[in-house]
Amino acid sequence: MEQPAAEPPSRNVAEWTIGVVGAGTMGSGIAQMAAGAGHRVMVTDASAESLESARDRLKKTTAGLVKKGRLDAETSRLLDELITWAPGAAGEYALFRHCDLVIEAVVEDLAIKRDVFRRLEAAVSPKCLLASNTSSLAITAIAGACKKPERVIGLHFFNPVPVMQLVEVIPGLLTSPDVVNQAEELMSAWGKTTVRSADTPGFIVNRIARPFYGEALRLFEESIAGKSTIDWAMRELAGFRMGPFELMDLIGNDVNFAVTRSIFDGMHQDPRYRPSITQQRLVEAGFFGRKTGRGHYDYAEGATRPEPDREASRGGQIVDRIVAMLINEAADAVYWKVASGADIETAMTKGVNYPRGLLEWGNQIGAGVVLQRLHSLQELYGDDRAGPHMRKFGIKYAALHPRHLMVREAFAKVKNLDDWRGVLIQWYADDLPGCYPDPAIHRGADCEEAA
Image 1 (spheres, helix red, strand yellow):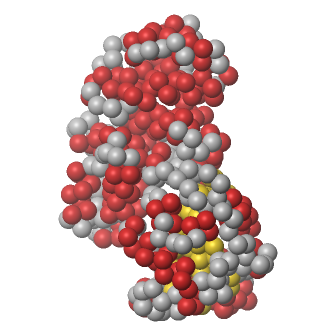
Image 2 (tube, rainbow, N blue to C red; image 1 turned 90 degrees about the vertical axis):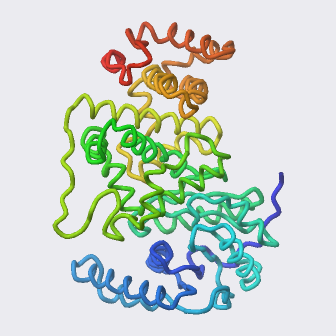
Image 3 (cartoon, rainbow, N blue to C red; image 1 turned 90 degrees about the horizontal axis):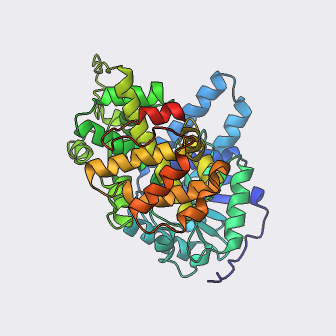
């Protein structure tokens, strides 16, 4: 489908005036980033209290940087002058009439976002680009509220915006290629690393990262390990900066659960993304995490966290299971052209600080080892979280890993799971002896040693 060209802004991107709708954590962070790049910035929020809070928060941040010598007083003053904080009722967007780009950063609700974009389009100039910071909602659905959907694009920043380097750029079905190029040029000027994602639920990072939370929750629900043990294993053994439960509490269980549910619904109830009842109950109880003082852990003064079970074998099983599911998800995203393999690796290392790219990780472990672990999970649980994606996983690794290029021809002849597994056994037997033990064995220790 050929997209109609959007009217380009008349000035160089460095001279653009930037608008931001929403003064929450993400909106205020985007405003700070834009002002730091030298743009005049206009920020509004339906809540005058939120707007004032955001302004005070930014002043405290810059004051702290000045005190530490990381920012001079004159630059701090200029940052303050570049940002206009304009309270107003919802939908009053006249202040954006001279903006070249307006970025929406309101609550993750499709109906609300569509209403914002409909009102924005009526207020801004024909040359103004419109972007959403949504983390999982369809850009095409948001753009559908506009008469000129070709100027709508997704720009998904990560929190904290001034610190996190990654921005996912998501064209909708009708987004003009010129708009995509301009958006990427602007983000590069801000010092951001961009990756381009298809307009699919969760885009790159939130889609691929679901098993980090989902498998951890299942391990806990199945009484395989406690939360502190799972966090210990993923942090100390796998090298992640935070464990899954620690990270859910930092993000907010309300936010994390809403993203999972959005992706689950957007993927038509694919079992890989099924939300956890355990997390749902925390949300219903108001246990959102650090921001409420209680989540998976208690953050009250004097509260102590349960000691993890540091038994190496159990920790290894936890890591192997979660990492296998993450690798499977990354390979599946390549297969479905969610993004290029290179962009997926960049997204997961720069967007959520994974210790290494998942495709590289899969190659280091060995495709046969990962496939065996996925097959074991599928046989043990009898659901489709791992099984149906293994063949695609193998095909992609045949394409990505030089050692497995010859497997492609063999895969073309596969008709069913037994044939497929037989091909794998034949091809990997020499390199990975003992890699196909009883499917009830989770870890496949012999495979790991051989790899």
